Length: 321
Picture: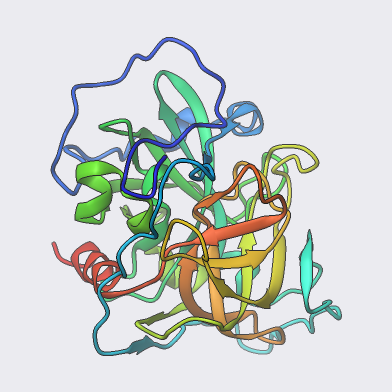
């Protein structure tokens, strides 16, 4: 992709297109509530990671225009109620900064973060996502390319919080709708690679009541201490466990307005949450970005879109019936 908005190269293996007629609405055309049964343990283990690579050094002469900013907005995390007498386990010590490794702590993040599974061009594929505090108690944030790519919305879309090696300890939550920013929907502009899903209740419960929801922060600026989580599924990772990176972010000096972070996550981590104000003891923070892409010529660095007004509008729209 060029900095001006041409298509990105996929890390997903090529094959028959099988893509549906392009839809330019900013939300998926039909609910996908029957997807839970489709995702057996075997299908989840074999899903191919869907990730993007960034622009090349010779593809553009000027950086992208700044993402519009507005008034900062902070939404606090929501924790599920624990049975009376139960206690939250203390986390193991975590290294900071961390360029990439298994999350050995506990806290809310092990339940709110999960893998995202869907069908893309006739193949089973995967990304990552995060349950966030919302009025509908049913909102998941992910990357835009994890809900729609190549002009077609993904199908059989489910969120599996706390995924571990084919297991779904908190259930498989099927989307009733998926949506993205207008810029990603119209032209797959990498600066706005943010997606969302609203999931149906499961066993009589809504998502946030079951696993909790992380907080959010919009229009909060650059150069922040952040923690980044995801389920990378390409070597050296296999998608079986939650991985994290941490450190101070930079602003992309090349072709986008994204945050950058030293991080060795690979394909499948797309859509995983970036948190500012992250507390290792409680496993909660304010989601401020998502894993989006990496430059092929700049290894071990992850980039994620700036959460400005368009990301805030997407979050608001996801909660609107």
